[in-house]
Length: 111
Image 1: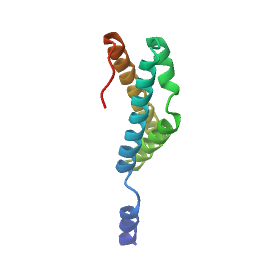
Image 2: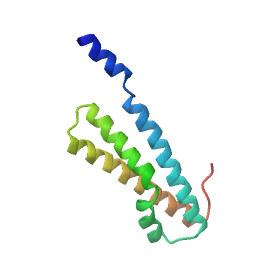
Image 3: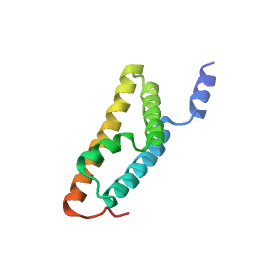
Image 4: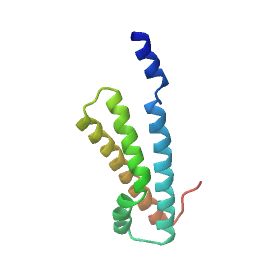
């Protein structure tokens, strides 16, 4: 019975790998959104609002992956969800800061 449990765990997709792939998709989408908004020359306030609703599909996949990884690590459902939400908020803040920097210098991010 113990060996069967170990085999089941080993065969399950690695939560960390899922977090990594969904994080990459989410940040790529945010970068694309950042570039489009810079090209459109929107204000910082407009960007700050738009970034929160941009990339919903990728954001939801990332939050689900982080929550699942945290749950697999033993976190409660509430703690896992809070952590996932906090990470998304951090990305939104980070990209808002990047927008401000690029906007103030009238430059575009590189690839």
